[in-house]
Length: 282
Image (cartoon, rainbow, N blue to C red; front, top):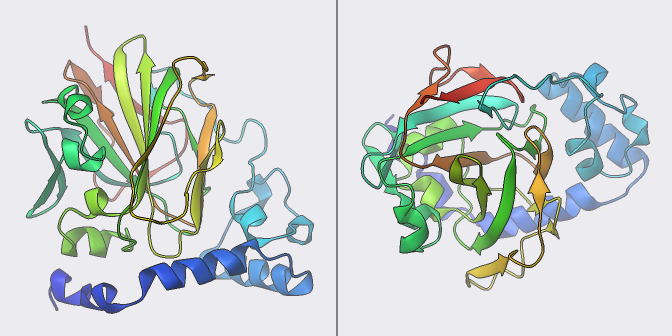
């Protein structure tokens, strides 16, 4: 069966209704029912609770509290390199941006302008730059951290579809990461601007940032933007910047310049928060 045929049911299913339902269930504080749901999830996905700051599943009032659980201090050492992985997960793709085209999967690319929500000026800063797309599976730690130190400039909520973002869907849905709902975070750093994008998906009830809280506004199809010129938000490398309520994908954009990705990286490979992602050359 072709990848496009395999994802056909996703075009037909009521993705927004399913996402709303999943968000309601995940946010419910249902006592023993919540604990049993968490226990089932831990068993099914082999979640390592030993590294959680709170390993006792009965301590979580809701599934969302469990899903966005913190790690024990020191569980993810931060490498002494320019750019580190901001998440636990798997490498979807990474490399050079070809003019304005980002590689998604064989036969599929999407533009920098599309993924940032249509802002041509912002997209132009990443012409012939670099990108990394990282997938978070249900079993992964779901907080997102900073790949390097940065100062927040803008945050843009871009409405869109809610396709799954698993590898099969990435191969089967054209322009997946530029058509799903997403939150675009624009930062400045000592090496120039960079963008970190939280991409939503089916049953991802919401996305949040440490400076704003839950971002997803009423889904009315309108792009929304917040600027932080007069409200400095500065975050250190490895510091938490946001989280997913259920799993999804992070896309990062970096400007043109000499950048060397970790030679051990390969599409499909596993990654952990804080490990070396790339080094700037020169």
